[in-house]
Length: 283
Image (cartoon, rainbow, N blue to C red):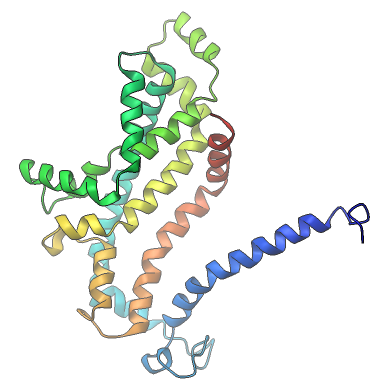
C-alpha cells in the first residue's frame, strides 16, 4: 500500500495505540501496589505471583488500610503532609507568579543579570541547595519545625521561569492601558496578568503540590522528632519494619499517600493541560 493509499485515520490510530501502550506500562506498578494492598501476607509473597487477591472480589483485605492508618499513626503524618504541601503550593505559587511577572514585564536595574544567575542555579545538583538551606535553618532555629519544611521552597528557579514564559503571552498594550488608568504594578498583575495565566498557575500548583507531598530527602535531614514527620518518612519507616512487617500493609500506606495527588490532578486536569500548552507555545 502506497502512502497515498493509506487511510487518513491510520496515523492517528497508530499514535493512540502507542500512547495507550505507554500509559498501560505506567499504570502497571500502580495497579500492582493497589492489588497487593488487598492481599493477605501469604498471598503477597506467593509463588508463582498472582495479580488478584484470593477469593476476589468478596474476600479482599480492606483491613490492611485500617491497620496501616492506626499502627503507623498515618493520621498525624497525613495532617503534617497536608499542612506542608498546601503551604508550599500557595506561597510558592504566589511568589513565583509575582517574580515571573516582574522579570517579564517590569524594568529594573540588573534584570537580565539577575535572571541569568537565577537560571544558572537550575544547573546545580538538587542536593547542593540543601547544604546552604540546612546551615541557614540552623542559624535561625528552624530545625525540626514546619518552617524548615516550608520556607526553603517558597520560590524556585523553575517556577519563576515557568511563570515568566506564561506572562509573555499577555500583550503589553493591556498593561500600558492599565497604567494610563492609574493602576499600580500589583493591580496590573492581579487584575490583568493573573486571570490570563490562570491555567499556567494551576499547572504549576500541581507540580508544586506533588513536590511538597512527595518530598523525602529534605524532611529526612531537618526533622528529628515524630511531631513534624511527613508521610514519605512514615512510609519509609513502615517499609523498614519499624511499625509492622507486612507487604500488604506497606502497600496500603503507599496507596493512601497517592490518593491526594490523584485528587488534585483530577480537579485541575483541564487547567494543567492548558497551562502546559500556554507555556509551551510562547517564548
